[in-house]
Amino acid sequence: MLYWTLVFLVVALVAGLLGFGGVASAFAGIAQILFAVFIVLFLLSLIFGAFRTR
Image (cartoon, rainbow, N blue to C red; front, side, top):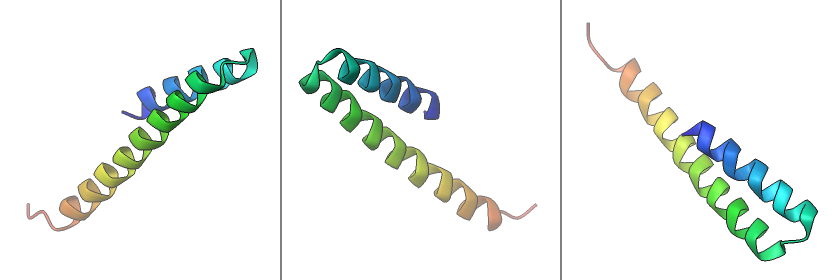
């Protein structure tokens, strides 16, 4: 998931450099959402991993 976040971020940066503002903002928004989902899932896996019994 972090891979896709970086892909969308790079595409947004390239689109912004080329002058496609609407496309760049859309891809940047998608990258932000994916990053937030990644952080939430990472924190949940840390929490549930800490409470897991062996």
